[in-house]
Amino acid sequence: MLLTSRQGTCSEIHIPAQSGEYTITLQDPAEKGWIRAELYGCMEDCVTMIAFTNPIYIAGIQSL
Image 1 (cartoon, helix red, strand yellow):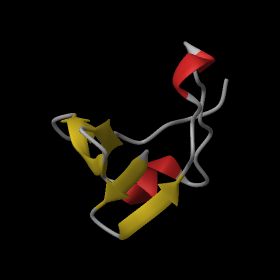
Image 2 (cartoon, one colour):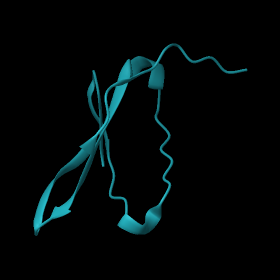
Image 3 (cartoon, helix red, strand yellow):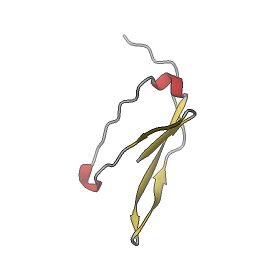
Image 4 (cartoon, helix red, strand yellow):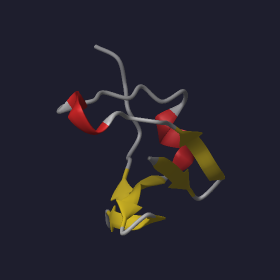
């Protein structure tokens, strides 16, 4: 999986196909403005993008 933002690539993570749910923590998420995920996998012996999200916009996050 590849995470991108307005700042470029945030993270590139290998997630096993059988993992089900996966949680990612980002450093300074509000500075990124938005995040988009791209999922890559093998189809017919070729690594290719198989899914992606629209941008997920991040407003200022404050701790309680």
